[in-house]
Image (cartoon, rainbow, N blue to C red; front, side, top):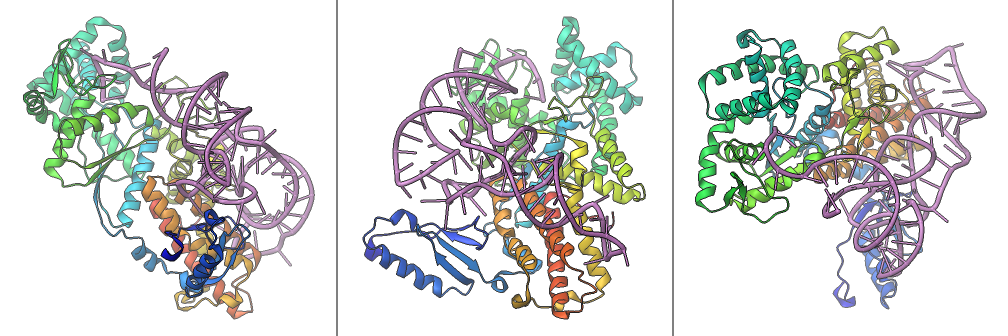
Length: 533
RNA sequence: GCUCUCGUAGCUCAAAUGGAUAGAGCAACAGACUUCUAAUCUGUAGGUUAUAGGUUCGAGUCCUAUCGAGAGCGCCA
């Protein structure tokens, strides 16, 4: 609209107005423009020619409300799967999970696993090349502490069990913080481990093997899979050269015997300890080197809790300062999981709560609600509760894990969204009709039908929000919205025994659409649908 | 002490990146079951978005200050 000196990118947004689907707000700011009426005419010509607009109106402040033509917009899920593909696919590494060797997965790992899996699935659906790396904490001081404790207590590392390891870890960690002799000895072991001292490597291997078996079984139970099982130990050998390189480029210098980055920051960035051994940041830098060598990637997402913000700021600024190849790096942070009273999640004894225990409690709780359910369904529902109740909250807010609330079928819960899905499955199966053949006749639709269909067309919007911000809660909330609207439609009228065949076929077709969207959304969230409940 | 994040209904949380009358879910209250699974549905009520200023046609969202909460702050990861 050059003639009026107005340049606008027309910004179409979803609206809160119940009678409409979309709104355009571009005209509002031109209320004092002398040519406003001509501009509006211009807009109207454009809108009149759009086939997807069923009707529109221009409100009092020149907000434009649009009701869309449902049939133009409704897509089969196959079409949606094509439509959501990004134009420039990227190769993205998802660094999440981060379990420690010697320590079972606990509540602190829950969100990284849930959010990581969801973002992995969502990006895969968007057509990006995805690679997940569990990034094990299998190196450094914690391992040294375990070995030192084991040596002192003459433990046979070859035959060490996961139960022993789980007992040793907190004791060793406690000794490290309280007993100076122990601390010194453990630090010495850490240093020798970094230097690949043979007997220590043997002990470390035994610990890792035992730990890994337990880890794999827990992850299997929780339905998590990883493309890469790399750990901090895998990059240990890259570190000496990396340090030498940084020294020769005058990027780091000695400070109280430790190497710090020359980048002016507050606090300073520590690259090695004063005894020459390595730190969290040292390993993470080397991990980037390792990934650059072995996998071409455009972007790395670190799905790690928000308390490590400073660490990742230091990592990212170091990567830039040290002239690592330019790639995208992002810390996808999240808040903590507290118990129902809002206190940090602990066992009765004060230790961290194991994920297997949380799973078992959830499983048993659901079993008391429906005692007749088979093991597979109980397992699927348990995992649904653990994932959905986590993903429904914005990742940056801390939330309270309240089992009673999360297993309630009334509310925004995993149980509710599964229930709606099961109802839809049953309806389609019992209809014994080829529902995919039906076309939707919008003239015959009632308010419940329209309400659901108009929600279904919003999928792409929430999908985009999730990809753009790495926030799965948009999709989790949206799944609740369509599930609720489906239940409303289902409850309002008996579909299968209805004598009005047009109505019946419409509703079955809509049910089928809902089911496909529900399944797709569950896939996005890392949830598997149950067949009965 | 310094830095960062946050403060929305009784409770737990959303809110399209600055748009219209701030939305959901619990809990509360009032209704609907010889059911295609009521583990459901329908309705009512609930708000000065911590407070005070500012920017803007327009602020929960941006800026400043105050109050309150949480987290982090070189030899742990």
